[in-house]
Length: 354
Image 1 (cartoon, rainbow, N blue to C red):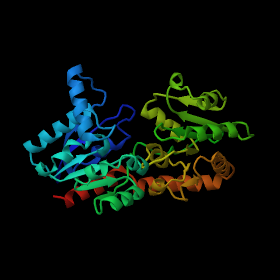
Image 2 (cartoon, rainbow, N blue to C red):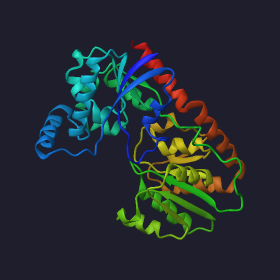
Image 3 (cartoon, rainbow, N blue to C red):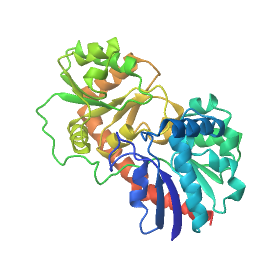
Image 4 (cartoon, rainbow, N blue to C red):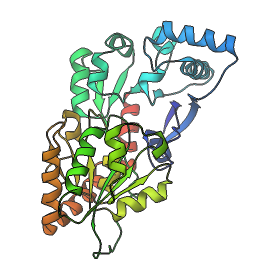
């Protein structure tokens, strides 16, 4: 059994069933885990906050590394010297790993970092490559990211994909067939909402009986004209701040998932849709190929609304194809991305470093 010290973050918009932290709900009995949590919303007295922020700026060299980061990482490193751990795991490397790189020679346990930002982000933060070279291993969430990291720091990176809770996220056994064709979109980060809105407007003006479920920000927070025009369409249902069970119900009632992207590594919505047996229509980006193939998805050219409209029309007009892809989507999620499998691969990596 591997003994892990983990620096973790529970993001407000992610439930116990989603997000990378769910990995640690599936580690038993392969590992024991001590955890230090970072709270990026924590407020400090003015003098303390300024001191921590200034120190973080010097150490982190990234806008993601801030006062809360250095406090959490300091707690982690102090805890690491008080006990003997087999591995220290930074579950989010970009906002956490700073001080540890400076004192790596003093850390007795191997350090593993999981990175979540796409290659385009790293190319604008190249100064961080040397910092992450101090880690013993870097976990990337796609083969594309792995190959890129290894082109910079040979042998440091290994791909272990993001996981999904395939017990919670699952298809309904029976679906009401006497209903409109439903397309779900979910998420905010790196989403191409301009293309999304164009697709929705075009298909809303067609004769197809389609409804769109949009899971996004609260309407009052949306100011972009293309989104306000989209939310006003009569066949658009808009959701914000919903529970994980409400989100699950939307996936289960949908026919396919539409995810136009600006960039990506892993994507929670894609994984949740697959687990619920939904074919995915997404932007064809290098990293997405770790998760999607032609059996479960239709990949479209970047910022190309016509491609996505054609993809939706293909699934809408071909129920047999839709059903085959739905079955393959669920199968792919269970066989490749269940958290039990990802936890086994992750602890396996940790064991090689003991």
